[in-house]
Length: 345
Image (cartoon, rainbow, N blue to C red; front, side, top):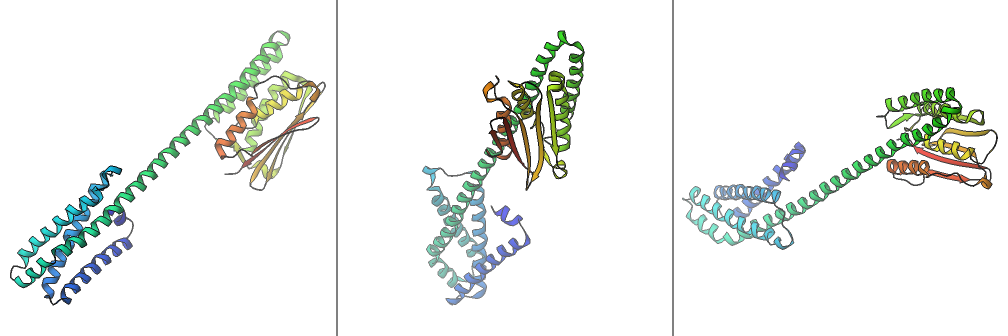
């Protein structure tokens, strides 16, 4: 603790020096007030102060590496008591050598031994208590920092795991479609393979970027839609609405693609004819607002699926921002809409 106090600034050094000087001045004045010679009073004060500082250093090193448990609390009093007795009697020995020609003062000093032990003991007990409390606070801070670091690492690991799940989830669906097209329409299957390769190449190259521009995300989504249009042909149409303000905003990579995939899957299920998927990016205050809507046929029911897309996106938003209110689903009579708010960090 002394090292930390001394290492902050010159102001701390001035404060510590001022406290020591005031202590020496007050003690010297007190001894002189009782009719003792000034030079003898100064010598004793300096000896006692030097030994007191030595005792403070001893306690600093003891409690720096040793934190008393509940059944060892008596050491907070015991160690300062032993140290204070040793300090006072050693300073008495020094004074006896330095002031051997001042016998009257030495007799006066002998009478003050219990008082000096008491004063030094009070100071050292107070310092020991401060050291123990300070050590416990430091331990708690370190424990909290370790816990925060562990939680952060766990969050990063889960985010990475979720992100790694996104591509295989989409990849398996695409492979199933390609498998169906190989016999019926080999050319479309071949086209789909090339487009899938372009999509995966783009996402892998940007794999280390946690956040990307809206314009970049739009490019990925268009690559993805090109693959889906091979699957569904003229039935699938998309409408992108991107405001100028939103174009320069950022969002986590591959956040929108699972929602868009769900919109296509559920929009085409039970619906005949063309299906229009609408995607809009807007800036609303401090948020990037993304809305994905698709036609919805209540009578056809819901298509089969694990619900991975919505759950994965909602979980990613919670892990990144610590909030559960950033994704909302609205299910109307003929339209299914997912609204996402992305705070701009």
